[in-house]
Amino acid sequence: MFVDLLLGLQWGDEGKGKIVDAISKNYSIISRFQGGPNAGHTIKIGNKSHVLHTIPSGIFHKNLINIIGNGVVIDPVIFEEEILKLNDSDIDFKKNLLISNKAHLIIPTHCLLDQASEMSKGIKKIGSTLKGIGPTYMDKTGRNGIRVGDLFLEGWRLQYTKLKNKHLNMINNLNVDISFNLEELEKNFFRSIDFLKNFSVIDSENFLFDSLNEGKKILAEGAQGSMLDIDFGTYPYVTSSNTTAAGACNGLGIPPTKINKVIGIFKAYTTRVGSGPFPTEIYDEIGERISKVGKEFGATTGRARRCGWLDLVSLKYAVDINGVTELAMMKSDVMSGINKIKVCTSYKQFNNEIFRMPFSLNPSSLSATYTEFDGWNEDITNIKDESQLPNNLKKYISFIEKNLQVPIKIISIGPRRDQTIYL
Image 1 (cartoon, rainbow, N blue to C red):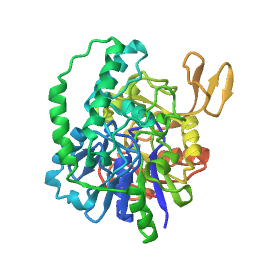
Image 2 (spheres, rainbow, N blue to C red; image 1 turned 180 degrees about the horizontal axis):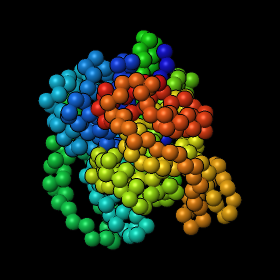
Image 3 (cartoon, rainbow, N blue to C red; image 1 turned 30 degrees about the vertical axis):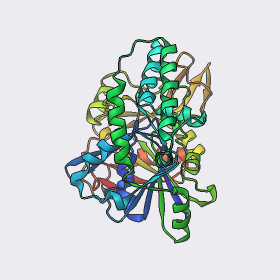
């Protein structure tokens, strides 16, 4: 058997959690392969919404195993809060949630260092969620990190103290004014460590090898989006992990030869949170309308998302670097009622028209070129079949497929599980 991948193709917030939840019935195992609690996957079941930060999005299916892979970084305090919020959801966490012993831990001073570092940048700040993600990945690559498996070895407290003191020195050297009560933060942290240790901690790569040999189907779930990839995103306004398909191999220990389908998720428009270039950003009342109708606020931070037209240049780039085999278009319903819809089909840079992602998206030298479409006014949130889709929406879908040369297999027409059209 093989592993299917599901990941975002824009700057995150594409709706990956909903689609993982919707297609989970086709799999035996859902495994998250990168990122940390800076991700927020929102799943709406009936009239109730659940926001997951660390737990894979298949957790609401009782017969599924959910794995937090080695590529994920875990904040024990946020993890505990997340579990407790789901206590009334009838989930057997001890049975259905497994944690890689190689996943790295976010300690309190990681978050403080994140805050101090961002503050020191002034107007050039990245737009970090301040969850300690970047500093944790820095310690991972710097070979100073603490892994979940370390918690079961003698001497991990000494390892913790050394790392904490390193961070405090770095914060002091940044010469910024941040206030914190480390004693209180550590009290919560060590309580949550004891909570975390009650869960099933495994050699996740071996578990996945064995599961493949047993013929089980696995879905690898990504976080953030391809344009936030540390190597291929809009650097330096990116996250600290590999959000693209290659990250699944590193983040789960699976070989590339075992990857089957790559499902790419994108919105019918584009959003991004925080700082960084955004060629198709809309600054008028249409952008405000999309933001309001689409409820474009971060599930983790609550920050308003910037909204823009669909960008086929960056989307084609993401399709190529991920090897996407099929697509899911989210929030199609948000575009209903817009008379004229624009799609970016190329960029203009230094008076040249370009169709590939350039090294820099510096807005002083780059602008978007658009193709315009007639919109649709129909309410599509209750339709049950693709034949009921408005003709202008069908034209929009066909244009995207033709440009990306990849089929759109799923259309989301609302936040609920049942508001999903399979083409």
